[in-house]
Amino acid sequence: MQHKTAIFLLLFFIVKIAFPQSAATLQQKILPNENNAILNPWPPQPTRLCPQPYKIVIVGSSTAYGTGATPLDSAWARKFRLYLLEENSAVQVINIATPGLTSWDVSPTGTVVPAPFTIDPDRNITKALSLNPDAIILNLPSNDVARGISTANIHNNFMNIVGAATAQNVPVWVTTTQPRNGLSPAEGVLQAELRDWINLTYGNKSVDFWTNIANPDNTINPFYSFGDGVHLNNEGHHVLFTRIIEEKIWDTICRRKDIPPVARAGNDTTILIASLPITLNGSLSTDADGSITGYSWLKISGPAGAGVLANANTAVATASTFSGGMFKYQLTVTDNIGISSKDTMIVTVNSVLALDDPDSPANINGETKSLKVFPNPAADVINIKIPKVFLNNYNITLSNSMGNIIFKKTVEKNSGNNFEIIDIKNLESGMYILQFLSKEKKVVRKIIKL
Image (cartoon, rainbow, N blue to C red):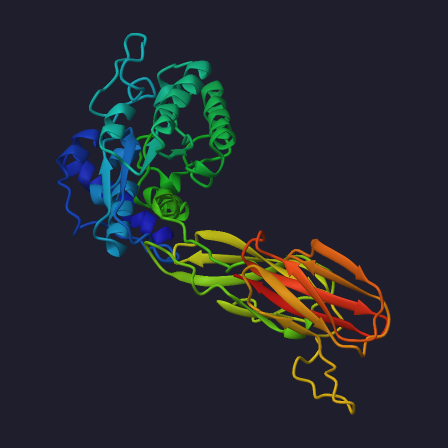
């Protein structure tokens, strides 16, 4: 990298001799041209960029404008725009920054500001919000301290600027202060304190424009200096560009714009132990503005060691090895932008010994051994015919799908076929469990109420 620095310094002095204008004047004479930017190696390609149209507005002073970059298209903001356009031609990056601005200048329109400061209505946060952005980048590196604005006012101004955007539900990324030569030691310390305050206040939406750019004494590292004690050269702008890219602002924008997927785990169900295994089907889940790329099933309640899942990372899973009780399963679906939604379904398992065989053959005396229930399905009543092979007293119960008993009767022993009639016309439609229990046998039947 040393040879790059030597070449840059040589070119810088040649330009200074041939064109003895100030650096600011020189920058104004460089016409924007996206084809002549000095492109350092680009940072590693991140995960796919947001495919939706979106708009980012940059608010700030000379660094955001591009001062120090030669040509101007090598400035961090312009490289940022080019980078996004390479992936998505519908992106808009609008830069309203201009040299010399402070936090007073870009405060919301209507803010009372002290002389000699004035609000710039074409460059302030109100103007930025009028452009209907999906995100804003605020870059005010050092003018506040250099122009003697108090710490309390700087804090208050930043809070008002970001607060105006927050009130309109627009996220703001705030860059830290940058080192600057020519400040007093106390002002240099204040710059560093403001850096820390921005990091603390704005958390994951603060952007580090300080580390490696600054010397230990809070001045600019010569390797990144444009030479005027204030601005950064192409190498410095590239560092800032890289750090803005690392924020992946587009991820936040896409998540805020994306319609979450709809998870559908299926209807709650009631089963008998003999009917296992069961299928858990989430294939009816949908995503209105993309596609579902991930499924994940999880058992979140139920007896330990039972209701074991298989193929839990597919749309259709299975569960088996049930015992009696209630099991809750959760389906999480994730769309192509990384947004997730959840849904649950409940499996209620009736713990029974066995179902009898309604088609069992007659015994040697020609008597049926099977419990007869008819009609089934039924709307008003169900008839139960109990064969005489059951010699002792017996209990009849009717339970709903949650296991709650809604009918119970004890019948004295008998020596012949016996009939019982149960009125079900006031029950809700659905499945019910009829249980016959005697000393000899336990019989369970599934009843469907129409």
